[in-house]
Length: 339
Length: 248
Image (cartoon, rainbow over all chains, first blue to last red):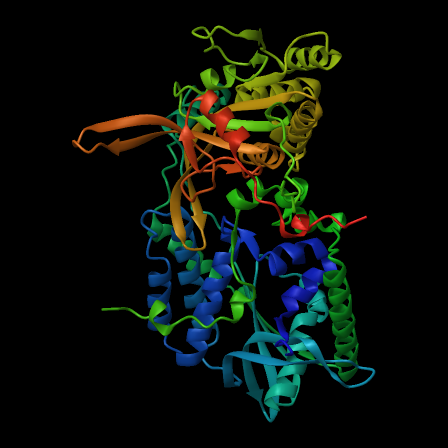
């Protein structure tokens, strides 16, 4: 009896291209690091807010969602920082785009479709490709895939690099194929995250040290220096609001899709499926050590590779989570108030 | 009629070939436990062995540790198990050694995390070399509680007191991570009692592990019982190893 094709995502294929060993850890052994990467939390929080905003266009609902998703902010410094930043960012976003030039067709749309052999046109019996896009919008009579991006900075390089975003190009192709919506291009909705930090002030010792240095330099032997007190939440919120009032914090970029690129990506995807099947059949998922420190930080599986898969590392620093969790729909009750 | 075996027996690794990390709260008996290992030699990086009748080399710098290791490698001695007590202090000595070597005050002075990486590489180099020697290697560490943030929330976990990266290096090279703990129980007559135990399997509450698969989940903090459990345990064979031998 034939088995159902394996659900694959672009994330899996991209990882396979970069490091096959990492794919083995994630998609075959189903391991993920036990510790959550906090940097990912802010991005997913904003994605959640943008979905709500574009669906309802009610900023109070969005702020309420942020409150509930950061409900532990009184005790948790990370959550408090995210809460302050997300609240200011979404307020700024709503003010920056009081009306939209596009019409929302769909939000958080998932798709699933076959992977075709470009030479024969036959569908793979081993894999299907699935994914989720942030939205589909209509501008005039044309359809665009909406892609939200939170960036720590947006410069010329950032905008130049958008065309290499193969994932969204490939997803646009699958949206066309599976939903029969002709996609003209991608609308990137970039939100820049303010780099402001809430001032912690200085301790009495730090102030005394600074004061002594100033006195030593002073010709009169006097100084008017005062101790820097911690910045209040209200003052920091005000600073954030001023920052997000800057139009440069929000940017929209439209990219038109090339049909040739679709064909290239389809061929690449097919080649990757064949390489994966070969690796799985032979049980060889080799390490790409050049990828261990991509983005100037160790890969999530670095400790595991370095220990040659020592079970002590595997069992104490990783947990088993089924792949493609991003495609799993959360029950509505998780974000709705119980009372 | 004798029944011939249909499966190979699993190899029994010698305890003296293994690398073990034992950690737990102060004064629980980690050093005493290790002192019963065969031919134990302590590389004592912190005081605290006064109550034990053991062979020890006091170590106060990384250079002294390297010298002691060189003597161990030379092999003109009766020792069979090397115990670094504590590995936390050994790591501190390693850090001091690198700071002195590069004439800096702090690892961060080298920039881009280079100082931390050099310390970790030196630490790993020496521990790996020690682990490859034909002696048992026991590493002793204290325990601390940390708050970990997972996908499902924050909770506290007991881990060895080594810095995060050093901990990953050590856990990645050892065969066993033994968490020495206190276990409270209530007897049939309602009387409360506490016993010192070793926890050998991973848990969300603490770090532990046994890649030999020979130890029970919990056992008394007693080397004789640990030794017995290790030697009497039967490791289940892997399916591919359980094939009957081909007839010639």
